[in-house]
Image (cartoon, rainbow, N blue to C red):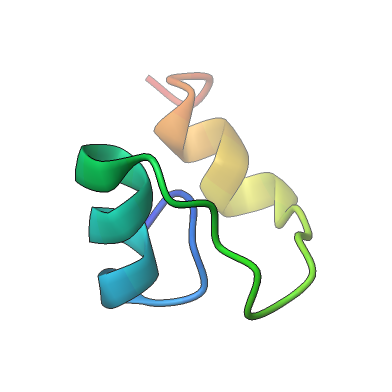
Length: 41
């Protein structure tokens, strides 16, 4: 699961090279965001 970024490449750029993802607008999907934040454990 990619928690942020529009794809795997943008995730690596953001995570390791501090290059923000500007390909797509950000949006939150409640289920996946809550799962990644540990609210379903």
